[in-house]
Length: 133
Image (tube, one colour):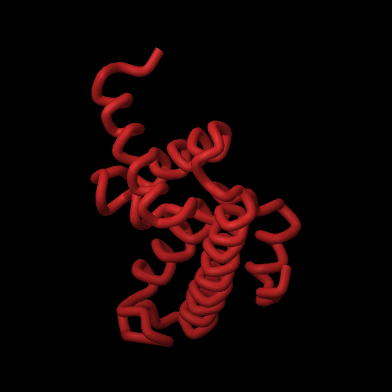
């Protein structure tokens, strides 16, 4: 059972959803309620289940997040491959400051894509450069 803090946060989220006409983007919940993206995601799920948010609008937002994560994963993976192919790892390349930077972005983007429901096939295709996956 949720504690008092969770219930007051939920009440604030309901108010935000009402103010925004039945759609509270995850980023708005994160900023206004000082939540991480997983907590805001779970809060959106609860708001949908209880009829405070438009499920289609949230699904569209999550689809955009997934596509952005897959795109970022594709770009960072291509850059890490280019670093590996060249054998030079410490110079800026394709907007990344180093191999480590590109590799971290690739890991973060992959984790985010998984969080938003990416399939193994989508991740494999993105890693090979097919963003449409």
